[in-house]
Image (cartoon, rainbow, N blue to C red; front, side, top):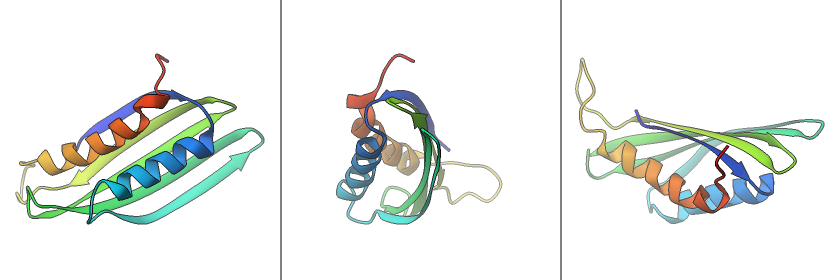
Length: 114
């Protein structure tokens, strides 16, 4: 498992579109699995789950993304899963880390110091 959390600034919908397009554009095997959107007043929350094949580990890895915020201040939490072939402990997380790096590079223009 690899995890990334960040404070972001900008338009919520623009950030979400950027995440979706960059994740799907940067990996030929990436797929949008499902998502959920919620709005209460000015507060928005979006959950996205992506999956892709990892040639490094010869398996599939998933990326769960939650974007939460209001106005132009948002919080992003992303967690990867899968990518290991071991039975009792996790080895070879390279595919998960590579998948997460795609997200990190996509949201860097929106990142703030918190």
